[in-house]
Amino acid sequence: MNERDSFSSKLGIIAAAAGSAIGLGNIWKFPYMAGENGGGAFIVVYLLATILIGYPLIYTEFAIGRNARSNALDAFSKVTKNKKFNIVGYLAVGTVFLVATFYAMIAGWVIYYFFLSLTGGLYDVQAGMNLPDHFTMVFDTMNTHVIWPLLGAIVAIASTGFINFSGIKDGVEKYSKILMPLLFVIFIVLIGYSTTLDGFKEAVTFLFKPDFSALTTRTVISAIGQAFFSLSLGMGLLATYGSYVPKSENIRTISRQVVIADTIIALFSGLLIFPAVFTYGGSPAAGPSLIFKALPQVFSQMPGGRWFGALFFLLVIVASVTSMISIFEIIITCLVEKMNFNRHKATLVVVAAVLVGTIINILGEGPWSSFTIGGMTIFGLLDYATNNITIPLTGALTAIVATWFWKYIKMEKELTSDGVYKSTAEGPFFFGLLKWVVPPMILVLILTSL
Ligand code: TRP
Image: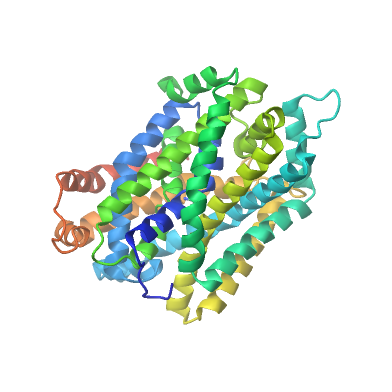
């Protein structure tokens, strides 16, 4: 994909946008966030945030990108012809860089677990040890041994960089179209197996029976941040990809499909992980290590589980790499257009910078784990600050820029491809929501949750 290239087909756009959206955010982050925040009530807020804020903001950011036809740093100032709004672009791209540094670490963990499942070593339980303790030990040992997460992260970053290097169309798009459906099928099979576990009922209650008394402002802002993170929103991705979308496409339709696909995979992940948590013991609030502790318990007990486990982790690797490609792509497009780097140089710079950031995160989980800020490790702090502060903030600013400064008529003109598609009744409704409700609500939530 060269600077002002276009996507070749509608399916290509959807595959790329959904490939970006569906990733660790759904499979790793959603379950642990839901688990930490009490389950059902969090999920209700998450779903509301996805439909009422995420969906209109996705098509808004897409429209800004297509109208501006530029990198994420300049898109917001270009559509409004106001240099001040560069700040939104810088916040978005800064955020996505921070996300990249811990995202690559988690992808590295998944790669480590893939190999450990393949060799069977993951399931060598010492006599007398129960399953939750065993898998906690495996996880902790990995982190203290720096070298394993580091190798995993290097593999993740290098393969991502390699694909960015050699272009997107023939690599990512081709593989995503095969592997993403395969992920879907594996999910169905594994959830089918999960329904037979003792803890399945309890998991469904936990996920879908909301206890609103557990709701705090922090839960609400976490759910909004999670919805944005999962949709790759507020980080310049949709502005970047939007710049490659031809005028002939209906942005609203594409956005709707991305939202649906992303939400289904998140809910599937919940249905997969919580039966394991409630069957074998372990805490739903285990945090970022949740899937690494809960799921292997299932694989260790099911027939052929070692192979299923390996296949599952392999598909998660694929889902993460398609997301990482899009994360890298945002920054690469900026370097190419702002610094006049060629694509290869830009890729190398991004790979090197992300690797350095990732190493800091890895050390922070291992040898430096006693170094904490506000009780959080370096990764914990980055995860919290991006999810609960900068991502919702950029989302709110995007809404402000679009509704107050770009304005309805111009936005609607872009969204309808200059009148080719009809304006829908939802247009004014969501516009009003983004103009009057979303920005003050998010700003208040961020401030009160701090
Ligand atoms: N949405 C991706 C996921 O769910 C992760 C992600 C976060 C991302 N921010 C992004 C992807 C920015 C691309 C661009 O895993």
